[in-house]
Length: 162
View 1: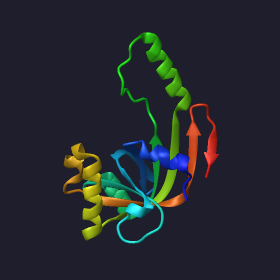
View 2: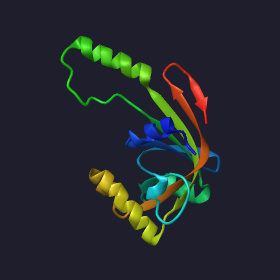
View 3: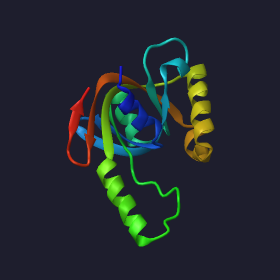
């Protein structure tokens, strides 16, 4: 079970870096994703999963078919949700963001969802990110079963293992 501070970081993000590997050649892709909590999963299963969509003609898809072991990196970045009133406020915000930056790395096993499960997760992805439709429609849906354990790090190089 992942600790709440790890789940919170995943909940507040829209993008993840997906690491795959085939024939000892690694690849990293920036991905839209959805965290699917245990109570929202298709069918009956334990624990959360991460869901992404990818066309079949991508290196990550080929890599996943050859080697289902993947890693995911999530990072909370500066969000400019409110316009800055002054340079001083902007710099304070940057400093605060720099001190509160965190990232988490997870390991997992990827598989291609089929039939009803694929459509269920496709609908979840489109509901959460309607603008991702060009990337999700017609793409393969990849379900990443989290393998347990996480590495959480902050901007001051404090690292926690779970």
